[in-house]
Image (cartoon, rainbow, N blue to C red; front, top):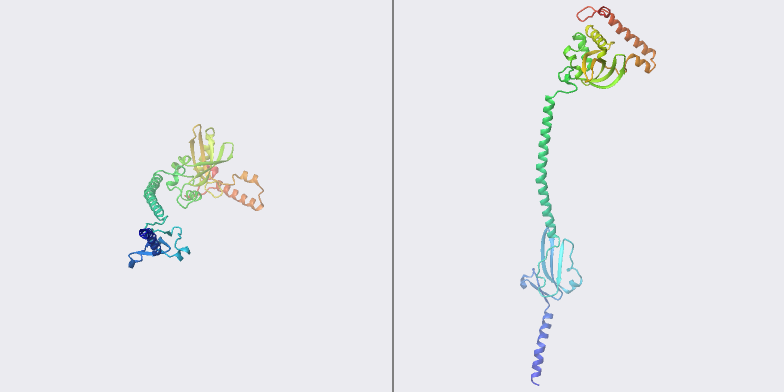
Length: 323
């Protein structure tokens, strides 16, 4: 019987130790508890938290009391800003915590930086190459433009029609300072290669009349066939041997011939009038009395100039005499 109390005491000792441990509370890591060797004791839970402060992760470990634990304030995480763990065994908060997306965000930022660096490394040389090619192309075009004359208007490159002057100015200059018989002979022999025919505006017994472009302006081109060479030659001779320059007489520019591959064309180049010939103009509409007077005056003035002999260095013989 004496041994029974001793054995009972030995059996109660573990229970007593457990009760003492429960009464003593939960042991946790506490970063702010320097006076207790960085440990704390609580009846609630151990608490560890990591939060993002000024772009840096800050870790806090401590104890949570039972009232605070019941209020569910500490054991709560927020997305991308705070991660919190609450546990209930001794020193269970001695763990390493990281924000769930911090490393992923850093990885994405690193990848974006790498992609940006690669894009810049590729784009800058490519843009530089494009700029160099564009500059070389523009330079080559300028050189070709300087060396190759205008195919349609090579005579204009030789300042035949100066900048700021029109075709009427050229004809006036030929009237006042030249012989009044059109362009110089050398120019006439090459003008057919410099006129670009645009459209046919009329037909007659001896050929067709075209609207052409020469030196940027419209001209009338009367084209004879080689069968009508005598008519072309006679008309060109009249223009070139008699001083016919007058504001009421069609302005003559040049006479030339051109081989179109099948037959030889004989050209007479003169001023271009949008209204066409007098016959076409009268057939298109009714002329007023005032317009009729102006037409009669201009016709009479032109005919008088043709048949009048003018004496002097700038004069001419009568058309009747030349014929």
